[in-house]
Length: 350
Image (cartoon, rainbow, N blue to C red; front, side):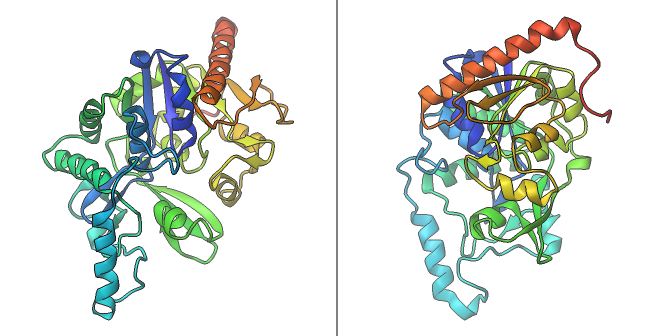
């Protein structure tokens, strides 16, 4: 068994080739849910759905978001109605519209602190994609847990891996800007294009949330942390009580999303800088004290005090992903070979 921690696009890209290295039926994927939002009454789980659509071979691999070839008639009509209504509804057409504060904590528990109006929908949601969100939300409203709802969707898309949300409890990734605003991550990244300077990142609700039993079982197996954003993809998971402790007690290999101080993609550098971490491979290593080994790019000059496997870590296709996954396999083998001589668990005690 092996467990991947997934967020953003880095780990899903790695999973594209990991099936050639790790048996899919013996693979679990724990996905970040801190990015989830409720828009127009339905729950959107971006990091879960990237894995879901990739595993179901329907992902749009140009954007790494949504379903390939999907239509957007509903989204376009929502945008048209908001623009046509104009002053009657107020606000800037197409801008995110949070529901009122009291509405953020009312109703569906899993969606608290992250509710947006459907008026002027700021995230482009395809029609088939929307059917997935409506099905998930309907199952939640029937009393299913998020884990149960996602397993039902995984069955519908014929996933070979066991796809798990990090928690059945609400956690929201909120970005505090230097200008004094508090933005949900999706507003920061999708609507604002990551432009507001970051002062801090909050994982609201994490202290009161828990990893599910299924997640804790998965974390008892060797773990691969893919080349995802350490702050907003892994940070919500690490903020859950007991999650990092579990990682300290099992073999863990992490793939750096940086080559030295150059990030492959996304807002990782800005976010790491915003939370006071060095935006580099060295900063990632500091953020992951539980990791026993790292997979670094051949051109990465960083020297670490842990086992390192090197390869070309750029992932543009499944062959690239297989190459990186084999480096992860070698790193896990090296860690497990040293396990009988291992000292106490890594990192500070929780």
